[in-house]
Image (tube, rainbow, N blue to C red; front, side, top):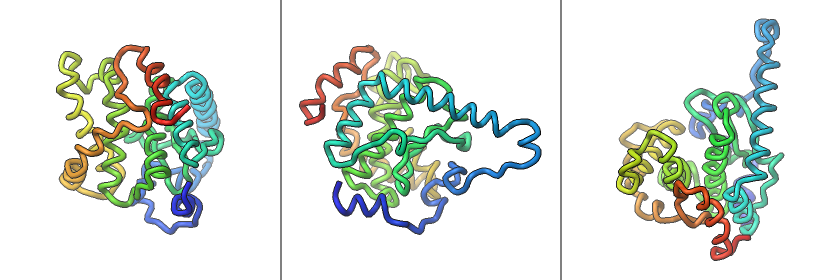
Length: 246
């Protein structure tokens, strides 16, 4: 990791919480207060149970996912080691999001109240690891809307709008996956920029359009868009050495 990257991650930064999207992650700003009503109805206990279930699923995904292994190796090779206990956190989020990357704390957030299955956690984890890669390795500045849009394009391209996701989801017509996949990436990336930054929809769309061609064709470090065939995970992992990753 360069000194520039280290300083961005480690230094004490004064920032506007809304600018970083912290309003969507209330526990990033401050822990939720425990009041009598929550105590009486054992809401806090339920939150702890949700967190435990989420963490258990995260561990299962980490142990079995070839894509997580690729991302971890890519980060480590670039001098940005990831410690799962330190850098991945299950917590409560607003319903608008399922996860996030916190560049100030250098942590991936998995939203325990909305990520209920291992498949969803897997998708969110890979998506956010791409943001972590872009911040640490590519030294993207997420306060720059074009940098943010580029990272969102890459993450959508390799996860949410991948052929595998399209096959199981509803956001792409399965019979027209190849034609609609780029549009899915544009829409998803613009949605993400609009959701986490105080900009208009037009500004989010414009940022995505400005950087789309370059960022859409950047498949590092996974190296390919994942197809609906289950073997494509293992194929991507077997090809990782071509990009210098274990």
